[in-house]
Image (cartoon, rainbow, N blue to C red; front, side, top):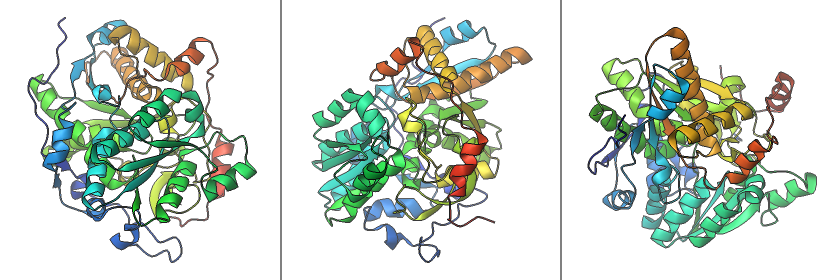
Length: 453
């Protein structure tokens, strides 16, 4: 059957979609960790430019995308959508499987969708330097690329596990002018403290966030940028789902199931939120499934309560599904999904049963990634392979039930810099790993943050 890209002309959305406007239950407010009172936008001013703070708290349904941001988007957007005919054939399923491919961006993932506007708004407010963290390197690469465009200095704290396993991601960041530290590092007080206590730690996103925030908080000309979790980050990513709706309409189809990997929520939100809008506005019943690792299962096995977004407790308290901010995940290769908590919006949607979540173990994920690569030719990043694992599970369910459903999955990035992960898989060095209930309870028991009624 003929394969074709399902978008024939440049159709870049002019607005981002804000799902908060449509949510039946709005997210609970962030709290000051000392007073436990709701915080206002002014509390975020030391870390973020005011325009991003406004986007963080807005209830407007749409936010206009600046022309300069759309111009940079046009380097790679709109991204293509394909129907995975060969994967359908391999699985012998009656399901129709489509994938939105974000790996065509300059950095190879969906992350520039928010890195570009974040750098733009910082530039407009005269910021000279931005600090950030990165798990697998996709976000650090994206922000480095964006900062280079706007002439802003970029400093990245890269989780040590990925720093060691994915050296070419570091080289990408260096190529775009960024300075990269392995985290925890000797460059910050929190980094030195953790290294003194745990010298062999593989690090975590929570630790790297603490380091980046510490540096930003000390300099009035420096701001901090986050690649997931926060509301404005999810807002920017909705360009994915808005394009996908147009592409599905051009294909004469519409998904019954929308799937994306889940770390902090930007990837999932980017594809799923515009389809959830169809559920809200048009009464559709599109299932939206977030796919996470069994070794870091905050959505499927975590608790919904207030917690810090970082390990050191420097952020406001956020209402989220969490495994505890001290939680350090197992050293899996999907570094972008090794985060202890879920974004506020996604957490509320899951609590209200408006979305679903699924967890997969390491072996299932890499098996799915290899099947997809052999069928469709693109080697997915380990993070992306989680979504593919869920898509395959849903397609096999269609086969068992003898029904045809349309499945759309976000192939959020390629795995061209993840060959060590696949090498380890083929060598038999990757093993099935799931957290025990005892481990989860021990981590959550450390929390002293407020419960949510």
